[in-house]
Length: 387
Image (tube, rainbow, N blue to C red; front, side, top):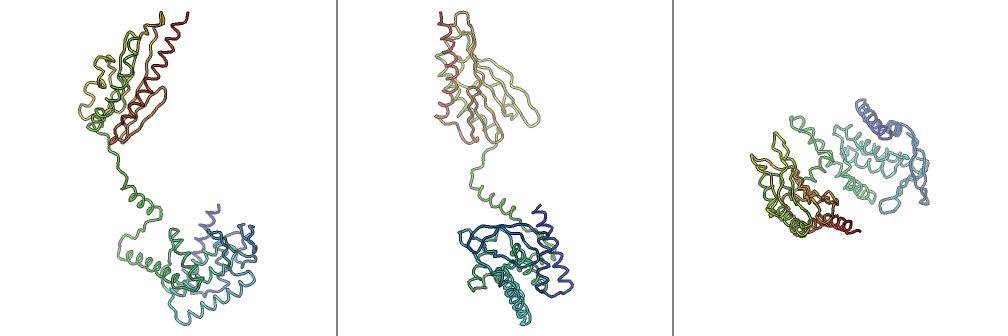
């Protein structure tokens, strides 16, 4: 609701300024207080600091000068002091007198607007909304003289506040130059619009996206999955992993009547998908590389998922308990990365396609995979040796 009121207040305040300019009204303390009422819409409570530096709160009075101090604590922990409540009416009168004097002397409108802006913020005459009021009044002065408003973005906040602090120390050149730069930027938009050119200016969000794009250019872009990349991956990573699993499993094979690997998964091209047909292969005989489905890479296809199920069937040392043991090794191929998974115990390894599985990773995966076989075989052996 507060955001809604802020937006509505700004909209009403801008309409008030436009009417003010059209009717060539004179800027007075009364018109400033009226603008404050329109901008903030309704009273609300804000945090405050007492003269002794203690935290407190107060209700914002609309269109009325402050009755309590409105000092603020800076990010460095220091307290920034504004005009005391009892001095505010006199200081506001002085500010308006200075404004009228500069107008009579035909001082450049940019300078008048910038000096008024700083003078207003230095007084901070209201309980809240002083920064917004200062920028609206600055633009009112500019527009009264036929200039476009100076738009100060959130991303420029630090530089903006620095120029105000410099003005507090007696040097107004910074705030005058800052306002002038933003008026020139607005004029440039007007001229480009009159010429029929594109006048869209990137928002802070769009600038952040563009900056992120520049930063990410330094990051290596992952390769997209292709038939060639997948074949190379099998040769450099998957086959060595398969051979290591087979090597570790071989001593356990003698305890079973049959040892096999079956394949299943999904092969895809741009227009169709079909399941890889299951195909049994002896674990030891022909076990030097991954047994691949016939024609899986024909026509530019790639494998999306490949399940290698290792079967040990018919435990021979279990008397009449001819149980089986099997485990699944799953290979999943996404557009930018691949995953090697062990279903039980749960384990996942992910890489981009330009990254091969290292020798250490091959040993780790194979040992975890075969360990689960060994634990179950040992359990079966213990059961068979019970009287």
